[in-house]
Amino acid sequence: MAGIFIVLLYVLGAALVVALGFFLYLRSVTSRRLYVCPACGEKQNVELMEATHCNSCGAPFSGQKP
Picture 1 (cartoon, one colour):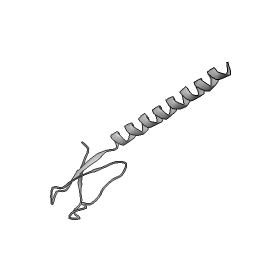
Picture 2 (cartoon, helix red, strand yellow):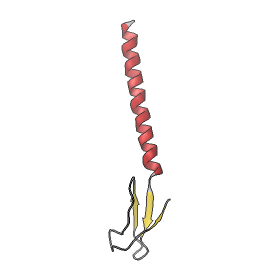
Picture 3 (cartoon, one colour):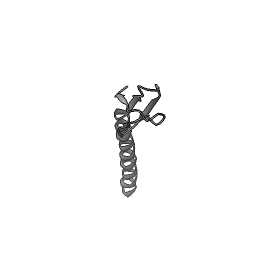
Picture 4 (cartoon, helix red, strand yellow):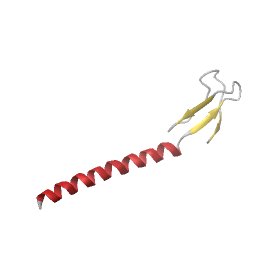
């Protein structure tokens, strides 16, 4: 009987890790942004942050979500 509790503990722990991974994946997907530089046309993808200027030429971005 004690063996069932240990197996159940491992199964619930694995399910928690999988659920946490799925939640973090969804969070990163919804926060993805594509920025296109109006001056040089370079595209930059970012997650979980806001970009304000182009890394290549320094011009301000016009942000758009894909």
